[in-house]
Length: 205
Image (cartoon, rainbow, N blue to C red):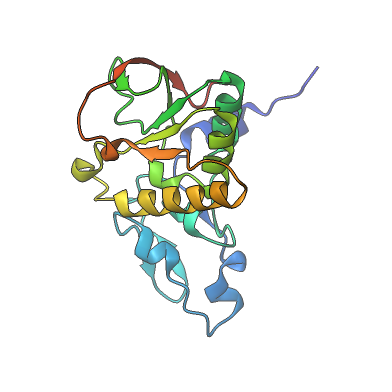
C-alpha cells in the first residue's frame, strides 16, 4: 500500500505560484552578477528587485515563465510544470499535435491543422526548449503552438518569447538532420485546412 500525504497533495494542487530559492539564484551566489532574465521576462511585473529578488503574490499569475527562463531553477513550483504534460504528449502517440494555452482550451473545441490538441495548463511561453523538441520528435508530422490569443492576452504579449523558443527548437532539429517541424498558428494566413480538434488535458496522461 502506498502512503499518501493528503495535506501535501492539497498544497500541491492549490499552489499555483512559484517559490523562490535564493541560494540557487546567480545574483545571490555571485554578488557581482546582474542576471535579470526573470525580471525582464515576467509579463506582469510580479518579480521585485530588492536586496534579493522577491515575488509579488498579488500580481503573480503562475504562468511559469520565470521557471522557464531561469538557468538555475531558482524559481520552482511544488510539482514540475512539465512532467505530466510530457507524459500526456508521449502517451498520445499522435501523428501531429497542437499545444494550446488554457485560455484557448477554455472553449469546447479548437479549430486546428492537426486532429489532436493538448491544453498545456500554462502560458506557451513557459514551455521549455527540451519539451518542445521532444514533442516535435515524438510527432512524425508537425508540432503546432497555438499563439492566436497572445495579442489580447492579459499577461501582455508573450509572442516574442514563444517565437524565440520555436526558432531555437527548429535549429536543434535541423542540426540533427530533422525537418523544422515546429510551427506557430500565427504563421497561417487563412483558416483553410482547419478542422475541429479534440482537446486533451495536459495534466491527465
